[in-house]
Image (cartoon, rainbow, N blue to C red; front, top):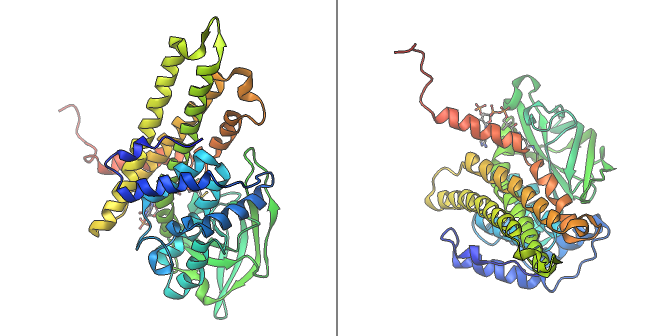
Length: 399
Ligand code: COS
């Protein structure tokens, strides 16, 4: 089954995006990757996506990428198409981007050349290590430390919920370098997975299986060249990286939701009930109408966020699209959950049967409302931005 790509005729997209989506959908139709073992499947998807050239969209042209800068609309289009076909393929692609994004943004020439070409060819698996047992939504509260040690640094702490944990070749680790300075005292380090003291063996099992682990750093020594970007500027780097990829999470949610709607349409047209098909009932038509509108609402916010960033790059303007990316992620993931739930309900008992497409989509969508900033974090980001933009609060009485 291939996704309907009519939405790509919207003015947010160029011909290059339409061709990319068409080529990717056609290529996916030729892929047969056994997904029973999620870690083996992700390695296989990274290799396949790398060999086919699709990971080039995760890295800049100077390091073998497709374009001079990351193109947000391409990331959205790719994730939407992959997610429609296979959530694990989407995951494999997304994590190559998120795990290398900080290097693309702030890496020096040596760091970029050492990691990005290999990420873009699918030869190195990337990971982004921000979250900790006591620092999830409050990313500034992390407790991992990095202290100077000779010419390099020594890292200690525990990272958790780390996607690609256990299969990654390296981790972009965020750690406190000035613990008293809050968000202004965090730095980012590139830590190779084989660094002595790094233990990424604690796999975490989740309802939609994918490579995920707790990563423990015990006196992990890295060279001075592992520091990514400026010392104590790690929080902003983490936020800037998330700003790029949050819109792409929304893209993945759209892929899942479009798949669920397509399953719902096929099922309700087939399913006989009370002498009609399920699709003949107005109650079904109304629900399908809600689902389609929910998808379009999420899609328009997602494409806007991606277009705004790409347009800002083209004009050399500020690329900060924090508010729009937060809106896209919040609305697209929440709406996708509703669409998938409605599709499952229309399938009746078949919807909860293990192995049915809507059953797996129901599990696949859930974590998207949590990772890369839970819905509540997105609400907070948007709300703060609304208040910051509004006129100063009046201090007067009734006039
Ligand atoms: N781009 C650039 N700078 C940013 C930024 C962004 N998107 N967001 C925040 N900053 C800057 C702020 O401007 C501020 O700078 P100054 O110190 O110069 O004033 C600094 O970072 C701190 O910002 P803020 O006060 O808003 O930070 P908070 O501690 O209140 O945290 C939230 C803000 C909750 C939004 C942040 O912690 C967050 O996004 N949490 C979710 C983390 C997440 O997504 N985790 C999942 C990990 S990946 S699975």
